Length: 316
Length: 110
Image: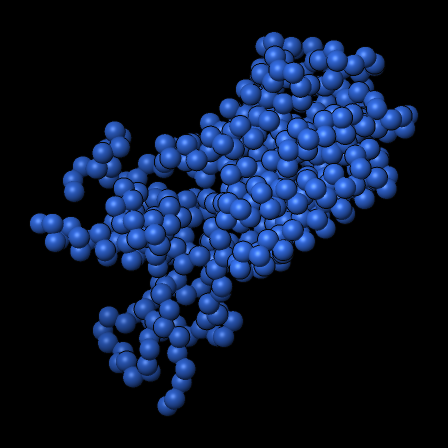
């Protein structure tokens, strides 16, 4: 009998989970917040998201063509980066800034270092830091207050900081997103819903968001108890904790490492908010922890059976 | 899931044969693998608490001392890491290579 047999190494059956499906889950989780941003900020938000996503996807394709790498645009990771970058821009940002930012995120932060899985920073946050340094007036001004449709309103955190004056928004407005801020961060409740969906699907673990937000809350409770809700809901903390800090490549792989990472990011966030020059500390604190992640992964390892707790092997 | 693939249908069924598994085209499909995205699912899946993605990476770089440092020889070859990998990387295959190489080197050193 003539039959064709494939002699492959075990396991012979694979789970049907793929990188593409994981990224699709993240996109699905971001859709409610995306809808809210379009509702509050109108066409401007939509244009920013479209420009950013298109630029990210095209840049990824061109980079991979230029570097003779397999074209992996279909894994959707560039789309996630594009959406997250647009979420980090104020509504009044010109669209070309989103295009430049997304191109930077994919080309410089991701592809030059080896593509997906090898980026040393969260691409969207790396690009945000780059845009912040290059066009600070676009990135830290231009917030629109959806309630009164006024340009250049102050975010709750810059009011707290004292760099702007105005009325602090109500708790309810912060929850539903009726406050000035970058387009993706305002609607806490929809971001939370997306985050819980991701945890339910097993795409991300609960450890980083819970410890990150918990640390910020604990520190705020000690040093600034009266403004606790503003520290949690008024800035990019929810967006950062669920969608940015949990980026696979730039967060530790072990559970213990994730705790160190999240607590570190929480401490840095409050440090920057209270002592630093910026009203908002989420993006830089996550970037700083991204850089430490390889160190955490080097020293925090799971405990292997048959190995003494000192880390030495008993017999060799 | 972890049986040995057969290259011919002229293999006799012997006492030790516990079962014969015939996979259909879809199941037997070997998926293309892409970059490791460091999701950590293999680390969670490993029943003996290894870091499969690290050992596999060392193995592909032929850095077998590095693989040894991460206890490649403790691998029980259950294949759970390869099964869960969303990037479809053949982790267990790489670890097996490292394991064999480390054991031969140890024997030589004796």
